[in-house]
Length: 385
Ligand code: V47
Ligand code: SF4
Image (tube, rainbow, N blue to C red; front, side):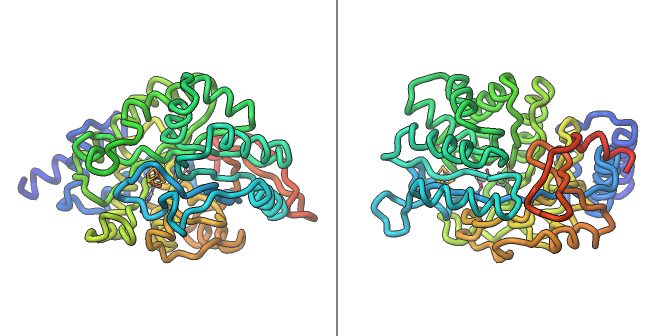
């Protein structure tokens, strides 16, 4: 394509975005082309970001819990997993899990992000019990737990349906579901990354079922490894199609691959340029998902801040006890204080707003930070901001 053709094609896409027309697979592939200036793609994504979320930058106060790293699967991109008999392997006790709930409550956390390995010897009841234990002792914390890969494993363990597992977990205290396990849906790549774990059909079916019973979920895409632009756009289109049907995804998180200590350690981690283009293209393709998260733990602080001008409106949380990305070489801090995360957002010109897991405003007691109440859904405040 020569420069004149390139400009004309970009104008065509800009017109579509301005008139809120849906982009096609070909549009997405065009925007992925390095010949199309990144700043221009970013400016288009920013238009959509401000249309949907005004000038706000969301964050939450959260903590992570990875109850075990022992896993029956061997995803090639994973540095976190361990074999059963490896000294690195662990499974947390009830006391350790309760201590995390106590610490989270004292720090004013509104969310515990819970994902881990699929342990060969821990029955379904072990996973259920830890949700129930946390929920009965610390009911205010939203337990955002289990990726679709874990739910698929529980189905296998219990020989029950997806719906049964989700309802049983919800009865125990599950609040919502994280978006992991999606990786790249296209079989050309998925089969090379994680051949044996929950396939694309299972992942989408589990999220569909969750939405049908009223659970809100997140969605992700792991990029910057073996995939090409075509696989990324295909992935986004599959998420968009499910969202058209259910409306249950609340946020999309592009996850930048970290190669250290993985079976793909010969690859380089994605550049900031790729991070920002992926963010912007995701914002433009996913016209029916309200929020796009720049996950600072993986992107690094500078890129996460910049991403707030490239389509993202959320920066994730203060985070404590993160293992999955630090095992794979992330050099970001272990956690951020509330002041630090608010400063990161306001430095970019956005207004920091604390949200809970399901995107309600959080109001804190000015005399006692750890005491909080849930306010209005944030989407009611964003347009006027
Ligand atoms: O499925 C694992 C990813 C996911 C690596 O919902 C890696 O807000 C990069 O569910 N390099 C699990 N990524 C984590 C997850 C998640 C993460 C952030 C936000 C949310 C949310 C959910 O972590 C896995 C995989 O895609 N992952 N190893 C790695 N070396
Ligand atoms: Fe196991 Fe999850 Fe790691 Fe895959 S990504 S090996 S399922 S812990």
